Length: 372
Image (cartoon, rainbow, N blue to C red; front, side):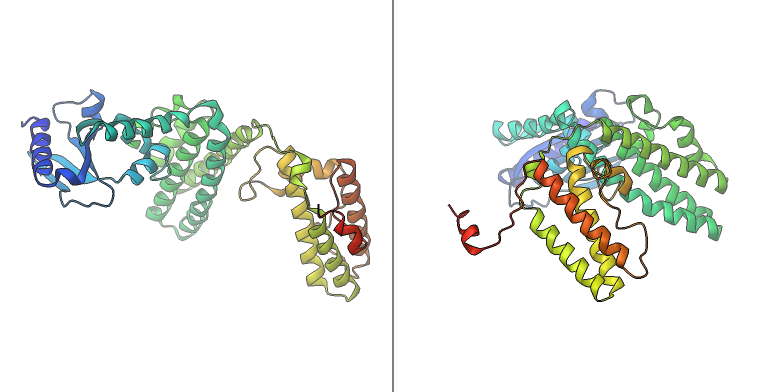
């Protein structure tokens, strides 16, 4: 069998001879770069064009049954791989960090690739933990659409659709756990699914759940396992979320906050007066969510309104005993009006007790004194 690096030399020599000024680096990755290749291992090789160039040298072919994929990756794409913002965090960074340079136009390009490798390392450090947990929370939302599709496939009795949705759920969970644990995998998914020990934070019996999703043909068992995996992954993410201590300051969070809230309260009271239930309920919803979620940024770590239940983000709101405007309906709106007035009193008191300016003036002269 032909030495894969002889094939690489052929590709490199042809590319450099004809388009040397348009190519910054040529590198390999995967088993050949890691040093754990077998006799039948293929060669994963890429080139990075010079900015603004697009040399026509990409080739994908089989030689003696082995795959050679010589593909172009721009610096922007390599950066996306290194940070996991392109093709996900769980596997993409490995391509950059394994990359073994076979050709470089100059040492500047080598340094640039090494800088990208350091970006991946930075995202595994403690300082990056809040950022990575936020990314995990955001990614969790993408799983939920597949849960809906799973239910539809189960109801329709379509095992193919059900297995596909279950597979997408597994991929989504794996990405969430990789982000939350700040780890990525050097090899592909098929060789990594048995490496769940790398996750410090993970669902109980994750290995068993993975086996059911991939191997089982029992629709009920697959659906039940997917739901369990999602629920337990959410608990893991909540634990990680709560591990991040908030750093926001009340004065900063609520600076110039009251005027807009007062405007909402005024509109709410006006809607109550004219008996407009729809408008009154809408303004009440806006008011309570704005105040509670702003407070959550002080006490509830890295809250995420697309991930969290509202009640998971209201610890300070509840502590100060703000009236609940959202839970109940008010047929004559008189009770909602009373609660809105009390809400305003509570909000003013909260801000004043925490040395936050209300930014409320009775005369132009009084306001003009602030313009210094």
